[in-house]
Length: 179
Image (tube, rainbow, N blue to C red; front, top):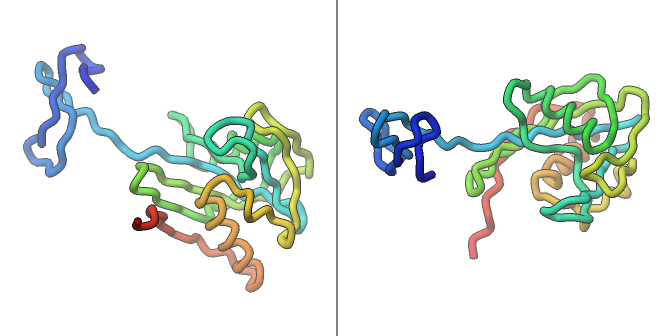
């Protein structure tokens, strides 16, 4: 950031009084410009005993399978964002949406909040960001073709939780492997 979005003056990086982290601070109006993590909202959508996947039509990870998810917009709840993303990517409407995994990725300043939900009427089709949409049984999940580690972790939790029939909220952190 070079200029203040409030008044247009140059900003500098410094630790504001009463704070402990470096921030972009306007040299003229003293506005502090906080930079916060992005929220990615999505759903693990099911229909009967199957899971709905989307094959990505966009980068990153174009051509690989994922659950419908994307960045939360202003003026919506996390659940609304998750349902919107599911409609945008898979033209699917949901019922019984419940928070399932919260996954922190501090190295890229993202937080994934993935819900579980049942397809409302079983209908789905590819949206603009999906090459195809498809239902998979648990034993045919395309593990080697998953786009993101967050999706893999959520699916691992789901496979395990199905065995007991209980689906608690999982709070996870993914960090890059040490080299």
